[in-house]
Image (tube, rainbow, N blue to C red; front, side, top):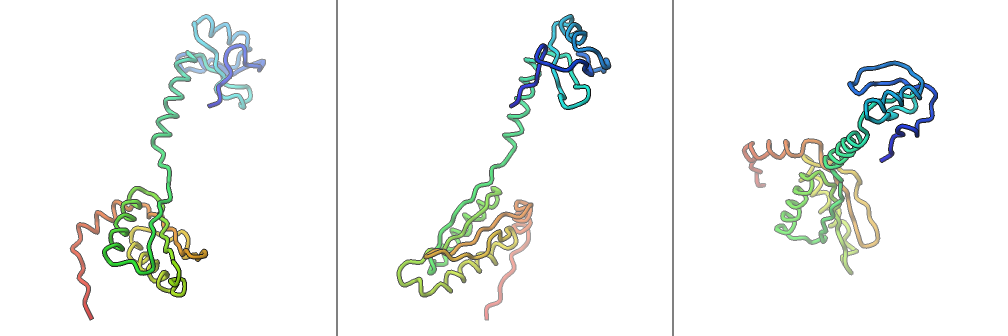
Length: 188
């Protein structure tokens, strides 16, 4: 974090001075501003160096800097680092495994992470890439209500993958879906 210039580090001839009480004193020569700060037993801190003339404030620099760092730490805590979680399938993934992995994907999407779905082909399975595309299409359909496709299906050697990211209000959508009665599918 860049440190502000304080006391004798300030280079301007005149500064716009703000007192320790937060009230504006006005434009004064630097030497007078330093004397006022010293008389109050506080520091002269250059708050806005790019202004014309620079804005300086009389305050306790140690306390000011501590508060500034504390705010920066709080802001950093509140930020969410988006991760890309990967879930792997085979072209012949069974129904139970498919549902288990799909539920894990929903957990990741709830946590606001992106999910990369990968279908891996081994040996002779390479001749049936259409099975892999079907798995990915089914995933897109099943998760369309809570996720958007960032990257369409891409084939890379023996892999096939898509990347999905959560919609803005995933929690709300899932809560509404749980409250609504399940719609039964007609068998044909």
